[in-house]
Image (cartoon, rainbow, N blue to C red; front, side):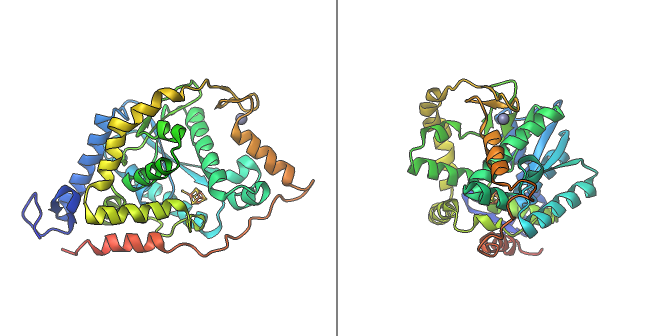
Length: 334
Ligand code: Q46
Ligand code: ZN
């Protein structure tokens, strides 16, 4: 297999692009693909600072790497969920990444914001961990952007994430979720930062290959709460489709953005106001995050330590590990 660019030995084949690249040409291809996405969707400007949400995984660190190399003024934000060893290891990856490049990394602990770590919030509220976690991450990310003077936040959602979310929302015909699914969410209120997903056109396998070839040390294990998540089933289904017909995921997502989303968009106009408690944008009087915090406070015994940080039932899922190793093993040493 030869590199389509230089004719040297290819290390990676990209079936959906009907091409193959050597290491250096793949890195250049990936960067170009991401920067072209940013340009075409008008995601970022070079004169504005961008807050990059990093989890320690391959996608967010690859994104930070590309943005920093391209000269964007980046600062990382790591949200410490307090999920035992997973959080300790993922935070360490982010800190190492930032230190090696002289980049600034901010850390916000969910426990400081809500009174408990994510396992504790789950226990106190009887709410699924991922629902409390998603709400907390969105809130903290937006507030950190506003407080830090960042007009825009970038997240590492990739094509596989977007296709799986779209499939889930379509199966349930969740009109509001379909209206909100976009690579750029403009700030529709002074208390909201713009949100962009520069990797939405690159697959998980492609970002894994980029991170591997760049020598980025990222956390391979998935969050223990991801185990059994429906979104993983959707990803598996989509992978089977992609195997049979390369390009299916991209077609699904791009087709939706071109022809599906406009049908849902107009129906979602909601009036946003400021939360009477914290001042962040919300649709009601008190925002969902403040309500969550109240629930945690109520569950905490007076003078107590708060809900125990329960261990997840299952050991960390190996699924991410397997898929990443498969991607890495597809990269042939030159
Ligand atoms: S939502 Fe759920 Fe993730 Fe939060 S609790 Fe873990 S799996 S980290 S993207
Ligand atoms: Zn609030």
